[in-house]
Image 1 (tube, rainbow, N blue to C red):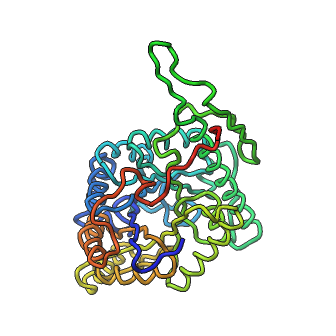
Image 2 (image 1 turned 90 degrees about the horizontal axis):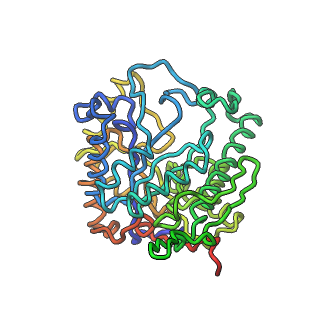
Image 3 (image 1 turned 60 degrees about the horizontal axis):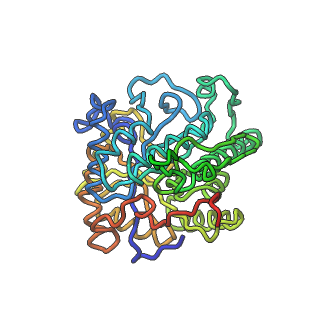
Length: 400
C-alpha cells in the first residue's frame, strides 16, 4: 500500500452528469441535450481512454440527485435523472479496448445475486475490464421506492442512533460484496466442457453452492453466469470515516478517500492498513486513491474565474466532500506527487465540467505526469486487474 514519488501513479476519472459542479450543464461545452444518449457517454470514455487512464467510474443512485444530504430537494436548476450505470458501462464496453469500466451499484436495496450476474456479464462484454463501486444509501425516500424496508430518518448525523444505522448499512454492504464475490467463484474456470460429441456442456461437479447465511442475506448459489474473465472483477468503494474504511479494508481492491492534505492522507492510509490487518487481509494488495474535484486551465486565474462564474450561476459557492483543486495541470501534478508520498497509490479525479476538465486531464495532466515518469506511456495490460497490478485470484471453491 505504500508508494514512493518515483512509483507510477494510477489515475481514474469519476463521470457524473455533465460534471461535478451543479452548474456545469450550463457551460457551452456541456452537451446537456445529449446527456441521456449512449454517444455522450461513449465520447467521455473514449477521451479518458485516449489519456491512458486506468478506469472510469460512473455515478448512480436510487433516487433523483439532490443538493440535500439525505432527502430530495425541489430544485429545477440542476441536472436531475440518470441512466443506469451498469447498463451504460455495458453499452460502452465494446467501443473501448483498454480502459476499466466501474459502474456504481447501491448495495442497500439491490440483491447481490443480480449485481453479481450484472458485473460478471460486464466483465465478459468488456473482456476483463469490469469493476464495481459499492455504495450505501440512508435516504428514506429511496427505501420507499422498494417498499421492502424502512430506513429511519437521520436527524443528527453524530447521534448514537445514526451511527448504529450507518454501521448496519456498511456491514450489510460488506456481506453484499462477500456474496457477490462467492457467486463469481461458484463456477470453476473450466466448468464448461462444451463437448458436442458427448453432449456434455458443463461439469456439474465444478458448480458450487455458496450457502451464504448472514444477518442480511441467505444465498444458496451457484450463479447462472460462469466465472468472469478476471476471476474477480475489481471491487471499489468511497470512504470518509472509520466505518467505511472498514468496508474498504474487508472487501475492496481500491478505496477512494478524501484527504485535504498530506498529513491527513498519511493518517487515513495508516488507519485503513490497520483495519486491513484486523480483517486478516494484510498480505493482499490494496490501492488507496485520493479523490479530488478539479477545475483545470492553462492559467490559475482562468480556472479560478471559471469556477467563480459557475458558482454565480449556481447561486452559492460549490463545496465538496473532497478537496477542490483549481489551477493548472502542472500545479495539479505537483499536488498529486506530494500526496502520493503519503502512501496514496493513485487518484480518482472528479472534473468540475466534464466537457472542459476531462480533456485538460487527458491532454494536460497526463503528458505532465509522463514527463515526470509518473504515468504510463501505453496500456501495459488487457484487464483492469492487470492495469492495477492485481493478480487473477484462484477460485476459492476449486480443489487444490
